Length: 342
Image (tube, rainbow, N blue to C red; front, top):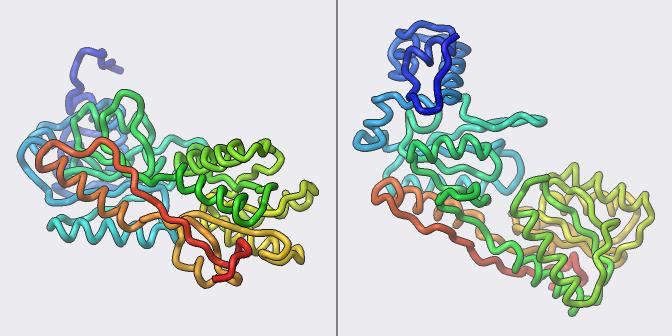
């Protein structure tokens, strides 16, 4: 098998050899002419990605030919968070006269998310990458191709000047915990984190810790559990905390989905919210106002962030320029779950 040196540029012959197909098949896949089996198509795109092959047609497209389409890469679309986000992105693409392609990477276990599906530089003018849906290596590959990208709810890998749109997570969480301590008198506040690697969860935890420190309350790692931005995980996390017997008088869930799960676990244990234990969340998704009791939370501009990501991407496509970092402000929403009267 031939090898590609670091200084040489991969050719269509190299792609064909790596994928175990003919050059004609590679050409049909790239140019979308003729019928090619799905498994073969995926194998060819995998070879293209692993070799950093940039077809001349794609290179011309980056410079001049436009598909008038942008792509959205995410891991899945489960949970209440995604409806307003997708609404904002769709509204933005429609406003600018672009079409939208969506691809879910469906990453499981320790697999590395990558563009094994043909969505990216070959059939769109730019992409929005949500959270951890693509690996840093794949993002670097696209960056080397000078392909327009905007990251949504994640910062770029070190050294890459890729625009980023997110929330003011730390300040929002800080205001929430300050309120629980100063206005409601809670001091033993459990924290349900998001999934490992989530920057939103990291900064919300930093706001939580910052508030505790400002009030001379020692951080207790026994009050930290994984809520996973997921209702079932939030429910399981609170059930485990209760079984361990570590006392707490309030729960801060890093998102409203895990807060809903926490509420179920507390009620199953015969505990009243907020009379026995207060509960707060983050995001202010649609069901939060309709819970019993309604959920105190931090309102994040989810739909606005989606529209802003589109706006920055279109600017990058059309002018080559975009704002490096946009952090949208959040708002504290007080409801009965923390003991307040609405």
